[in-house]
Image (cartoon, rainbow, N blue to C red; front, side):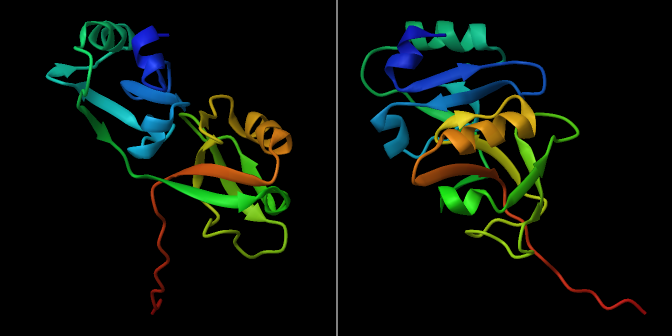
Length: 162
């Protein structure tokens, strides 16, 4: 952990299955306010390209106090559902990488804009690194509103087969 990155309210890491340097947890108000989400990939801090967590920790340590600019790759979005709605989700481990894949819904319909095939990356600001089982435990431990980070957007298109 980088103490200066941690002071900024984010926990960065790199691990097998994670691209470059990934936001593992968003804990600080400012990090939340600027829209950082667990699962976002951090490319640069200032002019430093962050290829590993070690490089990221050093870059945060050496960054001047005040504002620093991070460049991210993100197609993630946050979806808020109520805890009882999370019991509608059936998920499985992804073939590779982090999170869990929604395989179906209990009643067949979607919940809160989620769709079968969506990859859930985080629960309440913390990255899901151990698949569907960890996701399920985090959902059970949640109270009231649950904030999920979903990777990307899915769209449905109807094609006529001839």
